[in-house]
Length: 223
Image (cartoon, rainbow, N blue to C red; front, side):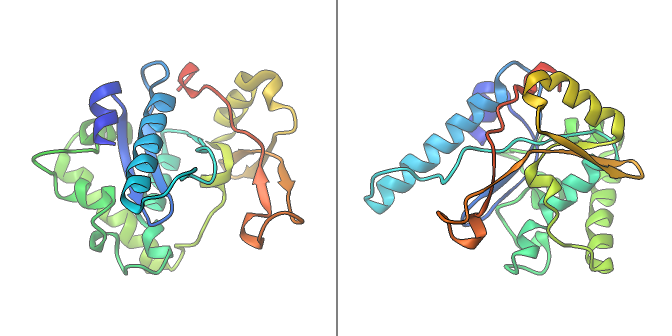
């Protein structure tokens, strides 16, 4: 990720690395930054793992899935959702205990090899003061843990877009013909554009029986 940041200018806002997948929250700016970065990250990870384990063949099960998020309260929810991924997995009690995530970097700025773009994150959150951003970030996570609402939400990993109705409708319009079969659902300012689910029950184990069709939208065209 650090190399993708240097080479392509990938703007990373948050991340969590687990034993079998990663979550990345990025702000798309330059053309083709996300696909180039994901190709680098996936390729480098797979190659190094195969060398270390003396194996051959594919490392990743599937291509990455991209979800567009409106930069309002939905961005805050997505930020905290990524922080708490490792807590939901039962690995730690608090994201501060996990060294492979953006939470610790946002709360304690690294002097070298920084991955999270704190300045852009604060700007998108509408927060000018660094100390205020850190405090707000801590409180968002604390409130979710206290309320017991830290549950898996498929909209962050299976939807094409998450935001208010206007944002989701705009996304669907930009998809054009690719929006065929995509459905908008939601209420009270929280909407999502979902991909149709393709059942593969005869071929896969239960956790893989609901696979989505290819997510091939070029996000750099409007984010």
